[in-house]
Amino acid sequence: MADPVPPSIPAEWSPETVLVHGGTMRSPFGETSETLYLTQSYIYGTAEQAEARFKDEEPGFIYSRFSNPTVAMLEERIRLLEGAEAARATATGMAAVTSALLSYLSAGDHVVAAKALFGSCRYVVEELCPRFGISCTLVDGTDLAAWKQAITPKTKAVFFETPANPTLDLVDIRAVSDLAHAVGALVFVDNVFATPLMQKPLALGADVVVYSATKHIDGQGRCLGGLILCSAQFLKDYLQVFLRQTGPSMSPFNAWVLLKSLETLPVRVRAQCAAAAEIAAALETKPGITRVLYCGSKNHPQAELARKQMSGGGQVVTFEVAGGKAAAFRFLNALKIMKISNNLGDAKSIVTHPATTTHQRLKPEARAELGISDGMIRLSVGLEAPVDLLADLDRGLAAMRAG
Image (tube, rainbow, N blue to C red; front, side):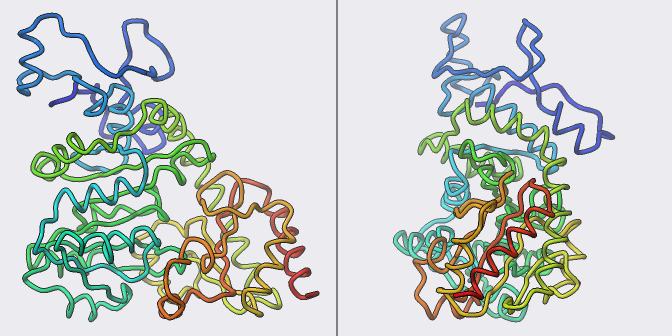
């Protein structure tokens, strides 16, 4: 079913302008803010019109499990920002990942994925896909030779996140895309940590990009959402029918919230990245911290690749404290401003202990292989004053050393 086409926008508009005005469809009332359409279904003027819409002969809405005007505005706005041919919204980020992969893959297909994945993403490729006869190979995403060895003529898709959660490992999008395309495989990239403002995987050769809109795009801890960016052909051949028949639909209310969030995304991310860079530099000087990882730092193991494919360092800083889990817990429990949670990209600074939360499902040896130690802490820098965040970090480090 073809949705109504939103008004076009000038090609010369900057991302900040697109994120305020792109995709807006106004009702006859001429409202300033995007309209929230809380409806399940739609009324047709005639039986002939209903038939034409179901036959895809007339644009329009049929049922909000398939499409909805508010959700369509969100999809168009993110499509314009990403530079994609098509975009679809889902209920959550994991719904986006699962729908993108399973709409395309079939029994007998082969997937190559980076080992450094969010725990739920790794579950999809390592445990869920094999249930349906889809084999997978996990590789060190930073090692181009490993990708080259694992990708074979039987490979149908490659999947990775870059930067990776929580280690901030990077994958060379262009190089891996070239290897995949040489055997006819498609490239699926989780671009959450970089956000659509700091990295453009489609321009670097990727075929499908997914987001958890729950993170930076909402950015204020209010609602869940996922986004899939792809070609018009991929949407037509695989994704659209899958979404329609399986129903991982985004709530129109959540779409409306995310539309409003996109208006401030550049302002928020810019401030968070500046604060993250300042905090990462300060952490490198603190006693009791054994390692600091930040994509914008010259000390990042893949600093050159970060500069090549990212326009900013991001707002996530990962670091390790001496003393393992006990020391990490003392540090976390002493914080007053930063909140212990498993989310990221929020206006509030959030700290996470990956080994016991987001990656606790992995066996200790698998975590060790990825470099996720018991002393590792992931910090998602928010919008608080950096001076206050640095004081909070000092408070945590003092408690850690006192123990």
